[in-house]
Length: 545
Image 1: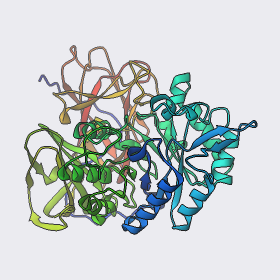
Image 2: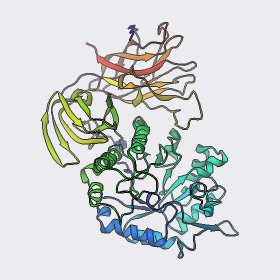
Image 3: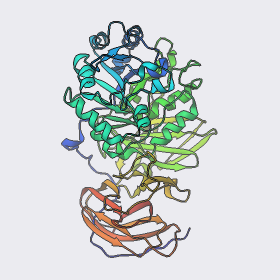
């Protein structure tokens, strides 16, 4: 690796370094509380379109009987398959064979159990079941062209509380995602503004989604096989910047509890794989929707799904998604604040998606801990002891370990990875071949970078919580590649520094500038208003005397 170091003088603001003991930060009003991800059961993974009034009511009853409602699971979601036909006025009718009494009695039954009822539609004119499951009654059942009357029917007349909105019909028609989901949100709000919406577009749809929905799918459908789980988690590893404030990245309905009876593919997960599955959904703040037939669920799976310590990570009032703090070899270390922002307690996951044993060596400093650190295993409900310096662990293939760590001191961070940044123009739809993206780079810190940055003023990377204990002057070192012929604009709390001398090649390089940070949280943006910026690996902040 070829490095260059340039020193620029500039008036700027950014953050970090200084460790040590400090009082825990008190949360501001807009930091708490947030509605947590929803928890419940959904019909698709176990039954596909073959659902009925009796099946839905029975599963609702089982959720209560098995203690899952008491554990926090509150939603019963009726997925694709309840449609009948539209009458001469375009009003949707329930399927006469599957739901002979209509849909309102189903919602009423769920409500009588003290839970909330969810439903399904498509943003286009036909459902996914009509396309992929040969369920012809789904043709014309989508909400497109019927938004006001469907919204009134589903959330006014029938009384449902949640809706998953698929995109098979929207994709067939080539519709615009933002326009469709925003329009549907507006129609539903006219009936009931408290309805929770899930966007099911099978990829992170864009930053606009938070204004239309409380959650959004970030991947294609899951199945009951480890490779599927690995794929889904991989799609969400670097999306933590888009979760929060009561809005969440949805990793799909869970496949915990399947044993050779999955209708969505795969033969089921091992108990170790199920622990990794459930724990990752919890620490990454995905909605927790059980997908198996509760009648057939093994006792070990039921016990796992009721693990209060893991559920607490998912339902934590901060509403944060864990981010990747370390990625070495095949292992990932994920971390997030719980209970209190910048407090001394954090949730940590060691994740081994590989097919071989993985050794973890995790310096506590990389988790922003100083002094001795108490560690608790949340799956085994056991305290592992107090450690200092580094935490070491060996994990088998297809596994994860979930920990609650409490340090003596919370250190001021010194490293900010590009993959932690919020990218206002980012989406994962693949429509723009030169759209800003998180990209693999084996030479980068954490093996990831941000590419296709710049070209317009709004195409920047933003770190919103650059933290400085006392404020003051720092040295900011930016690590980048592909700098030839490019420039960087660094915006620290609104003060912009332009850097144009980035070298004559595309190798990995670095450049340093002085910045000044205020005490507390700072905001840093990196971009280039009217041309490409280099690919950004990370930056570090070091307090100067």
